[in-house]
Length: 293
Ligand code: R5P
Image (tube, rainbow, N blue to C red; front, side, top):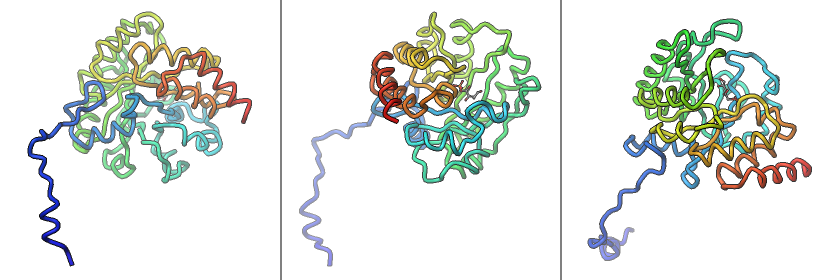
């Protein structure tokens, strides 16, 4: 039987202690609702403020690209070292163990293959399915300056509206057309448009000159794409420089899964993104782990 008197006596009202409102750690995200903040906290580590996303959604327009021929063999073993998996719902349902710990960012746009005009995408996912799959964010390609610029931006704004209804974030991915210059001026324009139109975070490419101006004038977090496979030290140097210049992490694919030692590479990237290691020390770590494997 409950000890009612005891319960009364043990009450502590702390009348002299003002209640503190916990601040939110992520750039530009303090005014969101609880569910959205919670999902963002499963993408971005509240300790470091950064994320290591593993991107392997390339098949949605490229088919079985190098390293992704057998996702069950090449990617599933990497899952424990990623904060977030960025993938299509087809691969999620068919190949990814539901007990996996990383948060899920679902590819939500699609349509054209590499044989057609890539900017001609539509939204390719119903928000209800994203809820069913426990997605933390939806990823949409935005083609600023591309042939179907307006349509891709409309895809972004529709996803933002749908995501806000359920507290699911939208990741805008700045896609650069073949004939466009990849420089800080372009990425300032593209990332800022994505943020202004409601994306909760933006993925873009790292540029050596002026990257800090891209991150500084984008009011929400920026993560970098890895891009084409580079030698491991170069990829780690890019990750280090991006973090130093204001990125909140990376969403890397080919530089991880096309590496000779993908698990070692993922751990080395983590050391930079979460541990503040230099590229040189992370590369040493990569070599040690690679030789141990
Ligand atoms: C490409 O559009 C996909 O969204 C990839 O997720 C993205 O390019 C990142 O992968 P990677 O590091 O291989 O460039």
